[in-house]
Image (cartoon, rainbow, N blue to C red; front, side, top):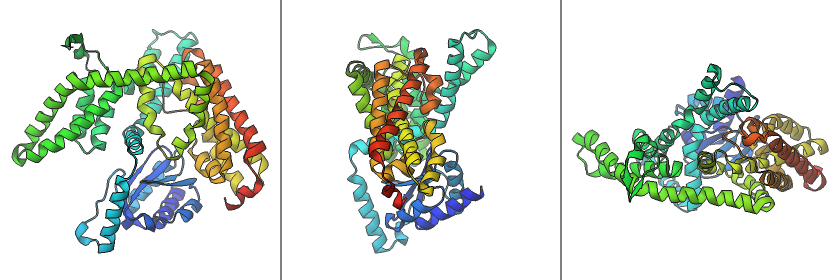
Length: 459
C-alpha cells in the first residue's frame, strides 16, 4: 500500500489539504472529491502525480486512477483526513470568513446553473455506481453458467443450479437495492426507499385490480422504483417538519409508507410502465430500423458521455432492456467506444517515441481490452485531442457492425472482451468480430490521421 499512500498524500496536497476536502467517494476507476474551495486545487500538478491518469474538473473533482487502485487510494485518503468514504463534512458557517461564505454562495449559484439533464444523469449514476461491483460479479457468474448451458451442460446438475442461484441473486432483489440507494441519494431514510422497491416488485400485485386491469409485477421497472423511492424521500422530509419529535419515529414512516404505497399503485406503476415501454421499445426500434446509421451514431458519440462521467446514467435503461427482452442491444453497441480507444492507443504506441506516453499506454491497455476505457481516455486520447476523434470514428464502425448483427448482452457492468460470456443467442463470435473491427479502424484512423509526434510534447 506504500504507492497508494504516496498517491493519497500527493493528491491531498494538490487539492488544498484535508481542511479543503468536504466529501470523499469513488467509483470503479475514479476518485471523486467534493472541495470546499475549488480554486485551491492545482489541476496541472494533480495530473503529474505518478499513477494519476487524468483529471476531470466538474461539480465533483474526478481523479482517474484505475480499477483496483482507486479503492485503496480512497482508503488511504480516508485515514489521512478522518473522512469516511461517502461521509460529508459540512462547513461550520459560524467559523467561516466573509470571503469563504461568499465562495460558498458562489458555488451554490454555480450548482443551480447546472443543466437539469446533466444533474439527472449524475444522480442516476450516484444511485447505480455503488451497485456495479455486484452487477459485475453476478453478471459474469450468470454469463459463465449460460455459456456452459449453451455448450451442453446439464441444467439439472447441482453445480449448475448453484451457479445460477449465485448469479441471479442481485438481479432478483435489484429493485430493493435501487430503492435504498435512491432514498439515500435524495436525503431520505434508505429503508423506506427499499420498501418502495418492494411495492413495485411484490408478487402480491397480481391479486390487485386497478382501473379494471390486474397489476403486473415489475411494471415500470427500475424507472418506477427510482421515482417511488424519490417520492418516499420527498414525502418523508415534509411530513417530518410537521410531526412532533416525540412521535416522529412512529408517524413519519407510517404516513410516508401509506401515502407513497397508494400513490405507487394508482399512479407510479401505470405512468412508469408507459415510460419504460416507450424507452425500451423506442431504442429497440431505433436499433432495428436504423441499423448501420443508428449503431454508428450511438457508438461514435458515447465517448463524450464517458468523458464527463455521465455514462452510468444509462444503467437503468440497460437493465430495463434486459428485463423486457432478455438482453441489451444498446450495451454491445456502446462497448465499441472502448474498443475504438484501444485501437487508437495501439496506433499511438507504434508511432510515438515518447517514453512517458508509451508507459501510460502499456499500463492502460490491459484494462482497456477488458472494457475499462477511462485510463486510456484521460491518459492518452483526450489529452492528445485528435486521437479522441479518431477513436470515436473507429467505435462508430464497430457499433454499426454490432447493430447489423443484432448482438445483445444479458448482463451489464463489464465491456470489451469481458462481455463475451454475457452475449445472448450464442452470438459470441459476432460480438468479438465487432470488437476487432473497432480495434482495427481505431488503429487505422489514428495511425493515418490522428497522431503526430509533436502532440506528445506536453504529456
